[in-house]
Image: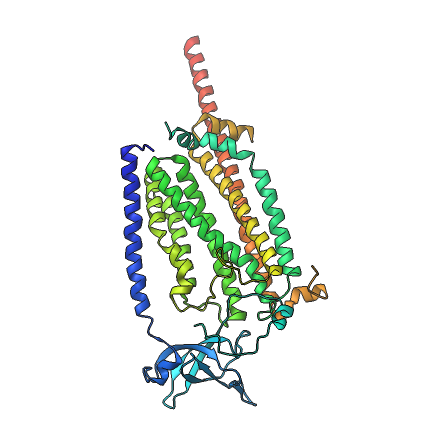
Length: 151
Length: 247
Length: 74
């Protein structure tokens, strides 16, 4: 394979450019990853690492059987877990369709002094599987957080 | 002279004449596949056990996102070929790929936002996957803007190619964002190396639409490139002949 | 394979998700159509531009020919 020296030079230049910019962006994204500390797992709440009354995000698997609805208003309470610790969440708006016990949820809100997370927003995280209802029913799938709340 | 065929490939006239015959077939294939796939996905694929009918958005969301990413590679590689071999045709392909990629990225973002509302509970989340897709849209728009802003064609070509190449960094980030960061966006459903986590009754319509989108992409890229070549080579005899004969 | 909805109204509603699904499809196909039409429109514009230029060139040629004729006859 012979290539004109000028063209080869240009090819090298292009490769260097792509490599350098990749490296730069790589470092930036790595730094961003370190800075994602405003997201906390329930065990961080248990360890007392979470600041009180500050807007933070939390996530975990909704513990089956923990969802409690008020009779009069939309107020709900549920417990999320990361397999190690549990955290109680209070919310007063409509939950998304895919919010379910045994599924992951992401909560934005403030930690109250009483240890309950008061949520402004609850988002449902769902998995990447798509199955028709009949197939889903035939699979033995009782709600549980045992599969590791993938968060 | 191993490189001679490559240079012949770079001739706009040769490209124009060669690709003309493929266009009707590509148009037919994409129309049939897109219509069949959409009707299949909308009406005949079973509903999802968890999401119900809202998951039917997958049949436009996933193919658009696929092509938005693949199209960026194509644009960047054409830019690189143009820079290294000074090939006019490669630059034309690169420029044609920018608006197409921008529209596909827009479709992926828009349908994703619509889909996010009933499933996650929010239209927009500053999630790593979604944010990196937004950056992809900006990169496409950047290439389009640069190609318009610079008057001298050769300078504009080179500037666009450089921007496109620098932007390739974003592509692996988009792919891996769901694994590297905590994201609301679920991991990939379709995988090459292991079994896909989608039921066959939903997978086949999805595959139909994806192939349809690929055909549509090829057709659109060819028609856009051909028009771009006509404009750029307007002074040549062959272009004037093509335009006056109305072929 | 079987149609999943009991009626056309059901198909449009999709259990309340219809609005999301239909808007997604409408926007997707509208965008793809715009993308498909764009080269066709540009091509016609280029064609018109070329015709205009060719007319200008022809008129100029005609004018110079007439002048030449005037000069020769004088």
